[in-house]
Image: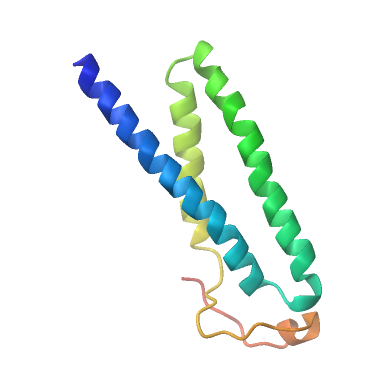
Length: 114
């Protein structure tokens, strides 16, 4: 039974690594589509920094295994599920123009969430 649970944990870990790698790459693509040119560099830098802060905090969450063996799995799992639900609040960018100025973005027609 212990070998089966280790295999399940390994499989969940591998899926999580692939998900994090894909999500980290999507930060750059989606941020460039979401913000107008005049603030795109600052927004991209902020999004990149947020991703790096997550990478810094992740090992500290894993160290919490000394407090409770299931605590790191719960924190990381809840964070992933919460992030997935919050992604539905982002506006759709398919077939939308890349705006050059903030004024053009403010005068654009409202987008619907996915």
